Length: 566
Image (cartoon, rainbow, N blue to C red; front, side):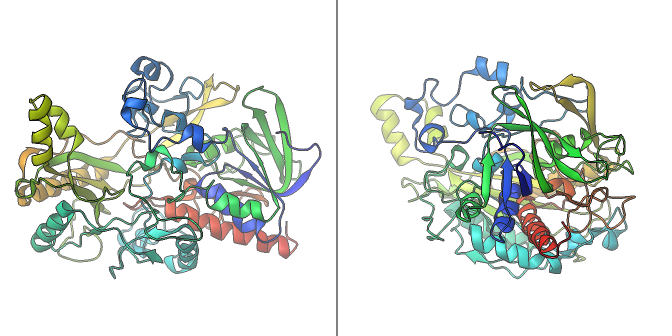
């Protein structure tokens, strides 16, 4: 579908994922005409969702055509969720190249479709606390956010209440409680881990906070615990924008959604206002333009930054939003210490637990969170843990030496529990972690590719050493069998798919790209609402905060229209 010629919408939103969906919902429900451009195609559940498909129904039994994956998705296949079941949710790397220095590898995982990556995200939904928003005031490093937790709190409430987040109320200042549905129960292994870790370390172990429904919510049924969320969800029992926010925007009659529209740059007029965008039809490669009174870039941190860098004019020779050279700098992504685990001898069982679980347990940030007991002066900021103690039915069964009836009897009578845990740390915002446009490489539509130059720093490595020690101490206390030590190396930059910070928010144009309302300093009617606006990252997943910021920005845009300022 092409945009009607010469149509001028009130708001044009680039991207249909977690951020774009919330902006569209907020402005459309306030009466504004919205055009949404999405670079990828729509997804059809009967064709694209595979959460109930069994391995024997697939040609390669779930392992995928490794030759084809290596040829077309050499980067995407490195993500745990990109396999024979769900490779359709990830881009073709040949069409979407990017570059990086040989000594600074970067793993860019992308999903281009209506809904973005919300079909296969991990659904972890955590609020930032004032520790994150005012981190610089606490330890003297970097910049504070221009907004506080109190300012964003009502939007956290709004998002959680609408999408449905299950979790337990814990009363911890470093991880604020929210508007929760009933939490999921811990597994038997998780219950044992909770007792051991809380007794030994004094840290709270809680059910993970996830955007999975535990009860019916706003017409969507509760999760049925198939535990294959990365493959899509027929029942829409976890949040994805095509099932939740986009229908809300569409019900207003104010939303026009155009898929397969690859935006290359924002079109600026001579007065320095954004008047529209230039986009290319993904299938026909036809070049087109669309126009609106306000433009919202919500394509994901790195893609949004690429669009802004490519929006060059005489008045913005380095890209719109880049008049002070900040755009593209301060890239962050969480790093993890992974691979630690072992079998739980006291929980070998002949009975299966009644349900699987799409979440495990969470230990919130304690290190450098304010208490003296967990203070570590070797580094700034801190980290959190997640893990589970779950039954290993299939993987264990495949490794048994028996055959036939002997194998079946062993599987039925001997189901072990495996305990696994990882730590996730905060990456500091540093100007020497940055992205630029590659002067030579272009994507399949002729748009300059991104060059990504980033590596973890001394503070990150010092924190990782403490993370590794804590994981090892937990494994020791758990008294496991066949223990696997945590990996010594850090995860690859980008691997956690939490890229943030390249169009950061701030009150001063000299140190930021957008203001406290996500408006680009250089343009009166151009906004950015995704993770690129983050000033600090904390150690918690960013998606809930992205949605809260987007809801707040959408409300602000609508109010600005109401006052006649756009």
